[in-house]
Amino acid sequence: MAAKPCIPKGTRDFSPVEMAKRNYIFDTIRSVYHLYGFQQIETPAMEMLSTLMGKYGEEGDKLLFKIQNSGDYFSGLTDEELLSRNAPKLACKFCEKGLRYDLTVPFARYVVMHRDELTFPFKRYQIQPVWRADRPQKGRYREFYQCDADVVGSDSLLNEVELMQIVDTVFSRFGIRVCIKINNRKILTGIAEIIGEADKIVDITVAIDKLDKIGLDNVNAELREKGISEEAIAKLQPIILLSGTNAEKLETLRQTLATSETGLKGVEETAFILSTLENLGLKNDLELDLTLARGLNYYTGAIFEVKALDVQIGSITGGGRYDNLTGVFGMPGVSGVGISFGADRIFDVLNQLDLYPKEAVKGTQLLFINFGQCEAAFCLSILSKARATGIRAEIYPDSSKMKKQMSYANAKGIPFVALVGENEMNEGKVTLKDMATGEQRLVTPEELVEALRR
Image (cartoon, rainbow, N blue to C red):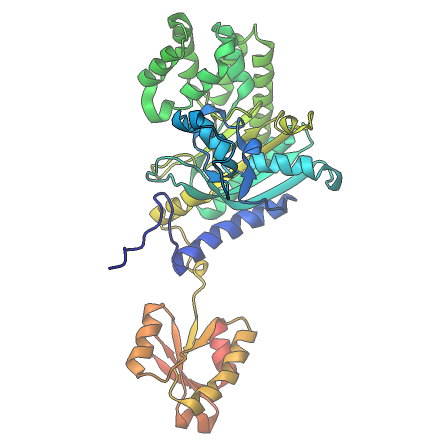
């Protein structure tokens, strides 16, 4: 007996209805990107591991899917290396390529390779799948789509402001209530400085970024494991638990970080972004959240994260500024800032809240019943005219029993069927049936088109 087919954990098949919903998400995001002057590019699913490794921190590197070299990948390996069972070292020998972990690092590589063809500031968007060797769970997949927008070649904080406007517009169009959280890596660096642990900034940010998931006690335990002193952990508590309005938090930070030049710069950058957005009247909540750290190592300035308010799920959008990313590819001094919509999580949120508009699922509107060769030939010309006006229509390919054809219409949720027999052909008309009400009426081809377009 043949083995039952299956797909890898953390991946999914999508039905026609699900694909229609996903395309609604992509089309909505794409249309908003176009409003703000972003242009689309694509990069390969595979990148050289040298491009990907070292850009996401130690934890990120572990989650890279590596692609085994073709041919004799044992050549060049000693027996000692094989017997060592050193998986990371052997992987480097066996694998030169990997599946992309996100779209930002490949974009930085793209900018460096195509620098002479680009006009700066360069505003690009990308809607493509990415892969992570993570443990699958609700809302977390090994293969998923990201919908990124980035601006490179400009230091202006107006870019951050516009990206937050894009986030607000997209989720307003979806009808999802969200909280847009903002922080700044310079503020986090300043905090690390004033508690006396400046060299442990990465360990601190990785730990506090997990506050929502594992709680304060576990965050503190992780900080201790990383060698951060009890005194520093004690100083950190009131900062990461800071409450109040955005203005109150900023004022407290100005006082707390008074001795940190870097920290104060982060405070002022954040104050500008928040005040500008508040004057623009966003529809969604905007919150300064000091526990937001975005564990990726390449962020250097403002960082963002978006949480849905009516569904228990992780971040559905994130991003930030990364001043140094293209430098690792030999092109220093190019600043960038970007956001990424998690399309798969947005898909789940829209499903849970039942927020898809009916027109998002663009199914067949009209089915012509097939009663035989002559009747089908008569229907085909009317079918072509209907399609020419934008009506989504089809004819059942076989002259099967009426019950089978009507069951097909019901299964696909087709709202109207057209019946053409000898009498209709003699009159040059069609019997149009409304599948919801059962009402039938004899109409001309022109009347049929008009009825469907309404």
